[in-house]
Image (tube, rainbow, N blue to C red; front, side):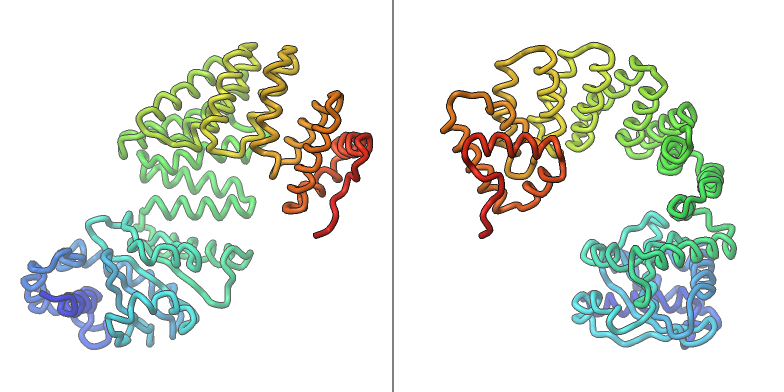
Length: 444
């Protein structure tokens, strides 16, 4: 069966599933269901093959009832299959949608421009094999993430209103209203993402108690969902003052265990936040063990960002415990990894060398820091210039100053940031003037 036939069958399935005789409203047609099922057996993949089953039909009907409660007359509805086919409808009048004719060749190129043509758009991803966990086709995902808000209905749904700027206060107010309405009109819609998104909105507006209650309600329905436990743990740690550290540890540990059970790998953010909570409780040994657990897991499931974060925080805990050499090793490994901006670990290492009086190591490290980071980081410049200021090799200092001024011409933020820090500015101006060089750069 060629692609055009496949699309026709997909659209027939969509229309039939929605209980449509003419305009997607009216009596159901069991014979047509049987006929389409037979034809569909030859289509791979089979995005709507299971729609003839009664439980699947109920899901569709529930989905459409929710949508009809949210949509305005004239809204555009896009029903999309996981392999990239989609059909465009108009919400004509109460409980009735009409298919817009679209050539298949136009679909991919036109999807980005839908918001130019229509004011309010709803995109529904239909894949019963994945259910609410379905993902939109990769070619459309960047546009959906950029221009749409995600709404966890019984099927993944994305909504865009041309009159509302993504990320604005109105955007979040609209999202909160839609999520609350979904929760009210469809109590049977027990989708963990609904609770995650609604909790996120409550936290954004500073409604802590509502956020916690939302996550707890979600956990009641989905006790093994790692993301709900993780967000509840984050609330306990970040939102309460003082933080509820023990409660946060408990939820983050459950989140990690559930994530391993469901996906076969650890949830690093949950493990990491549990370690931070242990440290805040003063339980440094438990914090060290937790950070080391993360590093062991990273050997099997690499993650450069969390490896870097873990090494930095583990090093800080080692310093608090008096284990300076262990801390130094972690900062050195973090610099080699180079997964995050390097100034953090360079400065930590230099402080250790300075306190311990390790002049040779300090000299090597400050020069390396200057060469690697100086063109972007004013701290690297100041630490190096302050170190070499007493050198008898004045000409070498002038050469280094000229290198810095070349960087400053390419990156004006370097000089501006040095000026804004009185201590840095004093060091810079004293060294340059003593060398007979202007502290500022000539404009290009």
